[in-house]
Image 1 (cartoon, rainbow, N blue to C red):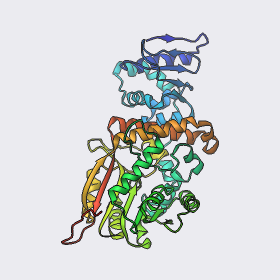
Image 2 (image 1 turned 45 degrees about the horizontal axis):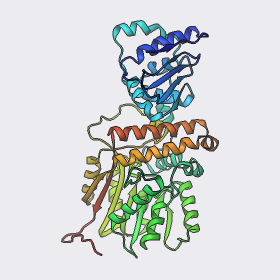
Image 3 (image 1 turned 90 degrees about the vertical axis):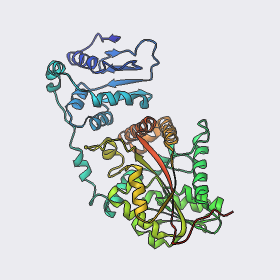
Length: 425
């Protein structure tokens, strides 16, 4: 490998360079550059396209990561602190991240680097401390309100920077992968409305309606009476404003309701819940489906869309970066778990699709738009929050691309004895 040592290299940089050299053995071909704080660098392999540069800015950064019992979280936190930087294609850095997380040392390597690792250890804090700052028991109404506020009440202007003009914060549908994000999000809303078979005069409920994109689209284009519910104050306020400006106040509204209280909104012909089930938690899935079942008239349809771990993936025994910094209390149960809860609550499963590739493309669009507006994002939410979202979006794209996560769209039917659903014209 091509190592360029800075003329001003200090003793710590020389030790770190030797550590890095051992660390990246086995990564081939190497399509990235490594730079240490003193200018020492490792070039990409010959004839490899230079995808990104991993900058190690702190002499203690690698010691911190490899002394932590939770390397995945430690790597993310090192990036947040600025101990590491990724210049260029951050998604392309995730294979390196996987290598660092899974790296196991031989006995000779442990002996060789024992002194280096023990020299100056800056252990990351216990992630449970940060999670304990949330109010209430996990998945209680009080705690859910706090968690939703943490993620969504960041800044509406921040989300506007990288979402589409309808502010749809869920998987788009690309009829062609050259489609732009605006087109693909409209196509997804059209697909949802079509799957539900919406007709003029019907009542539609959107559980977890975000900034109101779907209910506005359905009311405007399908003549339904649409109600959205959310517990995010920022989302509700902006959705209400958008509905008024669009002249749709007589056709749709947003209620500040927890999903456990949707009975207050009445009974509906069709129900949708897009990108909200991830917040429910496995312990509350039955309650979630029972509440949706009760809100739906007999013969009605419920379209559910949510992320799920592929069933073969093991459950993390430690909090992940996303658990601590992005979606506290978020859970991604496999589709089999979700469908079992739906059926146990009385629903009949009519259709299931996996839009994994579409979410891969969606998160890449979001990431590029965020990066293109990096300076404004930092002004709105600060450097750390910008880094959190940049890392989260890049990681999401990578996990969907690898097939470790799926985006499942499920159509559920509420029947009654002797009744069958038929598509009308």
